Amino acid sequence: MEEEKLSESAIRAFQQAYEALVRGDDGMISERMISPALDLPMLADIKQASIPDDKVKALLGQTVILKLNGGLGTGMGLEKAKSLLEVKGSETFLDFIAKQVLHFRKTKGDVRSMFMNSFSTSADTKDALKGHPELVQGGWEVVQNKVPKIDAESLRPAKWPANPTKEWCPPGHGDLYPSLAGSGMLDSLLKDGVKYMFVSNSDNLGATLDLELLNFFAQSDKSFLMEVCERTEADKKGGHLAVRKQDGRLLLRESAQCPPDDEKAFQDVSKHKYFNTNNLWIRLDKLKEVLDKNNGVVPLPMIKNAKTVDPSDSKSAAVFQLETAMGAAIESFDNSGAIVVDRSRFAPVKTCADLLRVRSDAYDVTEDSRLVLSAECKGQPPVVDLDKKEYKTMSGLDKMLSKGDVPSLKHCKKLTVKGKVALEKGITFKGEVTIVNPTAEWRILKAGVYENQTVELGENSEKL
Image (cartoon, rainbow, N blue to C red; front, top):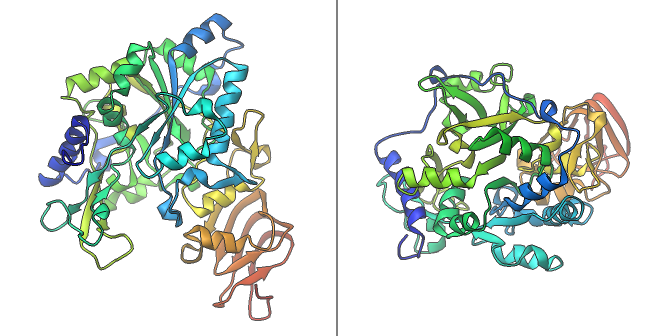
């Protein structure tokens, strides 16, 4: 890592994770160690009629918006920045982010913005934002670090002479903290009087800077605030918030940290009611205190992901990729907290099924360029379950939509697609609908309304 000129902060953060691996710490958080998070404040209850203009101006002068933008979207078969995917029409995630920031500056007041890019997305992002030069001026980005993949057998750095770049991997978005510290950006922001940082994912277009939340965060004197949503069946596999019994601190438990025997409890949305939206509010002066207290790192639980050194070669050497989650820092800050927000602030895209959902009329675009759940969905996003064999990558989704527009999903509770199905223009799904194509060829689903039914596209169906 020193040879690659990575910062001391990055090296110490990796060392922390590696030492946990070597001592056999699997990072698991069992059900007996935690209790559910309860009685959290709600955004709906803190809304104010108005905030004085002079207070807004003062708060914005102390605030920076940071978008996590390091992902390549390899899980969706992409080799470019995921934020370059088209979301609505021809507009990409980056187009929406730029519009959001510029609309805010025009209507509310000037505020800093920046991106956390990776080595793989920095150039693409800068090129895509050429039309918005004001967003790529000095201090516009911090670049994510990289860490060695670890050989699963020897626990030494993995070697892959055929392509040495594959010996490295991203360290997860928990790298936000060493990246800010190691780049000098944290000290620079503090020197300029910036006190509050709002962080969210570039693929979550519902997460814009909210003045009520900013004001609440400032008045609460919290060091760290996590936005959470109430879990539904569509969210049961994602991480949830909990309270550690030992010390009463809030913590985040990801699926990779759940022992197999606790999976049922992990997915019980009536027990563990809140999930992390990855919209975080951080007091930068308090972050500096945590770093100084812990030898330049934020103590974060290690997440061990088992992979192969070459992701495209399942027979290549088994490795561990050591990652951390930035939301897990909620347990590292004194006086941290969480607040319950509604679905208007959460519209992420992790899979092709997610992208189909947000491209549909189940999500509307607001005047300030946010993606919000349609009122007709009544607070519940449609569950979209696409055949993982056929629609894991964008090539499959593009084939599905090659005959026309995205189907209507605003009255759909659950859509399940099994097999190779191409959708004609003019399709509406309502209630719970399953489309099955048992054949090996792409078949076309005709235009029309499909409501609470299962449709099988057999040999007599039209081929694509």
